Length: 329
Image (tube, rainbow, N blue to C red; front, top):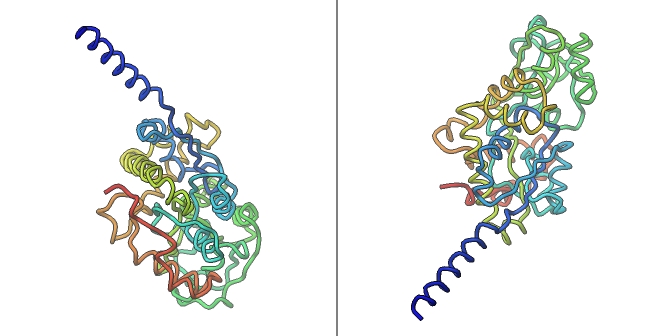
């Protein structure tokens, strides 16, 4: 009888173990801010090294068509997680969208003035009398006046050429504009690739204009109803980013393995190398990725209220736009 009881117990334990193994991973979608480029590589490294799987997450990474549509998709429940710029999160939240960020990856702004080095634009003062291509209404163009003000250059001293991202690139490549507003780990590389000439970047952040950028966005409902998922996702993402900081080539290779048409390997590695310094400020240099300083959040919201068309009431509710409590300790 005792032997029979032991057999029953053994069978029960085996069944329980099999049930635990067989439990399927939670399918999760991460919607990116744009088409694939170097900035997105760490998430693919996290998949390849099993960090998301270890957290019980079956992650599907989908390309986006801009931060605004990504935030809208997350708010509508189309994707559980979004990777978008912080300005888009704030602008959506202040209008009532139930979204917030649970971690900021790019804590230094990638915004920059980009030009061919041969144009001799090494500092803001060199923009006087020059033509700059920008996209009216986007985040870059909204913060542009703040950059000029900080740099001591009058807006009237610079000629403006409007156009979308492709038009801006072509304007610089074809010498229709002396410079463009873009991101220092992306458009500068495209210009160099097209012209076979070196490009110069003037970061906005070097002149005191630092609008924190790419972050992870979720809905309040996800945070309230499945906070454990958010914590598991951020643990995996943090490990992936830390590994990418140590070995950016491995991150790029992981992305190219999953998406071979993502771009040229050499250019992607260079782009990621330019992105890594944006992960931390002086305040967060000794902290894990995504753990943004509250002062950086406040400064970004203040910048958006002054130049980005955000109601000044946002300054009274800064804490509603983010939380850091779900990041790894």
